[in-house]
Length: 470
Image (cartoon, rainbow, N blue to C red; front, side):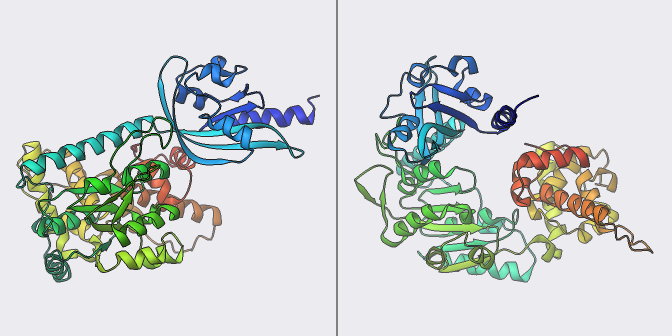
């Protein structure tokens, strides 16, 4: 019979192996006693190359002063979200963000565990972004007339009087130097409005730099915004951040409410005094940047849930714009439909002449949870499917049909009070809406539903909806 302790160890090992993050455990001698497959994949190694081996033998570029595991063993204090760059024994460069914790048994340290997130690829992409922005900025110094935005306020198509009034207000306030806060649901066109404001401002010839705060891990986001000083962490080099690169122009921070509270405090200081200090550096830089921030959650909800510092909110909320969701702009639905048909006629070399009356009615009934972005993707799908001269009901995406089926589901004469069935139906409807808003992206949909990505994938397999994008 298996002893309880042995069973507990097996269950614990199984759990650690299944976690979607790198787990590395060493004893007090720095010998690896547990190392899961995710960690091995991050490091480009096999588990057998690490397990039972001295840490510094496997990772020769580290030493007891630079290794986060050794730091925790020596100080017996945890380290959270620490960037680390190192070479494995095959001389492959690895970039991770580590949370490292001491392991105590009966008040005696017996080892340390490291939970690592690999951000090598993300770091490369971010560095390329920064280098690209630097190149754009350098080019603009030579040629001030070069455009650096794709959209103007004229590109915000509307016949809705409320949206027209917002455009007029935006055109007027573009000349101001005050900070701006934009609120609107996902897909309503917040960046289009922001680019239009920059284009109409006195900073039009300066750089326009956009950064989605939800797309980057906290430790990396700080270095991207404020830059890094050489030696601030292992592998760090002198690099300007987006504030420095946006000097003389506009910095657009999308989904600002997802920025960690600690980082919001640093952002507030920059807004107050216009001084930037690179991560790990001692020198300060004065910057002249106009901040425009955007959120896809209502400000009242964000403040009530303490996702945003109130002092930062009121500092940014000097000028505020709210973009209406598409379902509240019924007259704009068909205007935008014809615009996207013309656009994709040019892109796909087609000659579609519009939509049928049946599609017209469905478009006006539909709630458009993904707003203008969803409408654009819907038209693109239909244009690819259409073989005639007009877009028909047969050309509609499956997701659209599913949503309309849920909405127009006939009421039963006898109300079904089955809790299980009603919960399943509600769950299916919410998942469908989340996928629509995120354009089929499972990770973003899971975030909207506030459940783990793996849980959503499991539910999708049970529901068997249309294929989704990772």
